Length: 96
Image: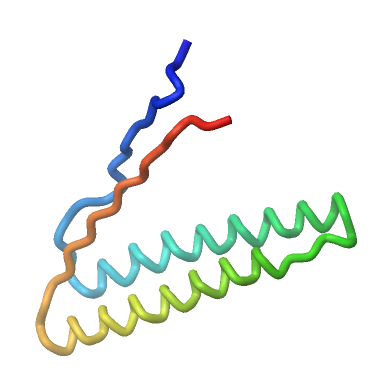
């Protein structure tokens, strides 16, 4: 039996990358997450044609905005000769 406070940290990425590598990595991660939400929205709509996607649309738009901001930062790093450190952990916690 697992206790109610069980959680785990999974390290997804932790390193120093060139701007080109960082852009590719972040693009893949964020695009994958957007695609996941789009598929979930489609499944919800297929189950219920009255489904209101407005909350999911907000999440997707926020991810797109974050992606654009990340690309802008990466382009600045590229112009100014910087590398980019990316640290990405996911906390997994059991809940009911």
